[in-house]
Amino acid sequence: MPKSTTNRLALRTRLRSRAAIATAGVCASAVLATAGVATAASASAAPSATHTATSTSETVRSQAGTQADAASGANERVKARSWMPPVTADYTLTAPFAASSDLWSATHSGQDFAVPSGTTVRAVHGGTVVKAGAWGAGDGSAYGNAIVIQHDSGTYSQYAHLSRVEVSVGEKVTTGERIARSGNTGNSTGPHLHFEIRTSPDYGTAVDPVKFLRSQHVTV
Ligand SMILES: [Zn+2]
Image (cartoon, rainbow, N blue to C red; front, side, top):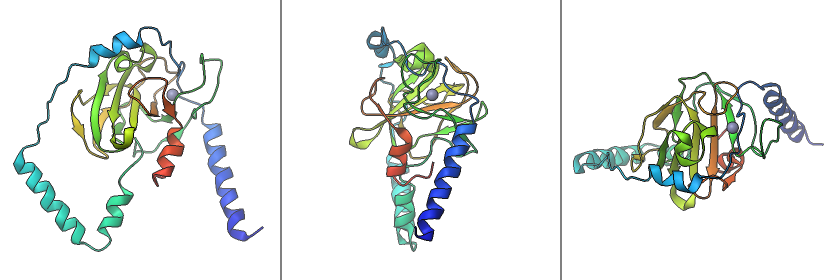
């Protein structure tokens, strides 16, 4: 087998064992009773256009963009930053997507990032906040405080067990913007961020978030 392939396999094995040994802080009930979700979802639907971009800030932003584009390699860097992980502080990947456990009623609907409570949680991509608040922002009590952001191309990201929600429904966020502090709310065995990528704003449409981020050239 060629040397490069061997190295790649070795790296993959190391990453896998790192994930396997870290068991602290996972969702105790990652998949939730769906009863009541539809009615609760409307509770957070009140639009609150708290951030209306002024023409001045738009101008500043577009000037900054022009300068950045002029710099050598800037386009590549901007593209590379198009998506990012939900936490930039040190984290350990714990319960992966689709894992099963006696703790859960079905398979795990997201990826857990073990981090201390209070860790900055960032939007993985620009978009609009469509859900924010307690009771999983309408998706169920097991999620604790949660946020859902709508991105382009029909993709949604979800962040759960938060100690503090720092955005509200209708707010526009940019890639990497701080949206919350991580926590241990809802059904959780310890401080961590539960993160989902969904194809709709609602529970039950999740896809593997790590695979998704890696397909967007994000190192997770
Ligand atoms: Zn989880």
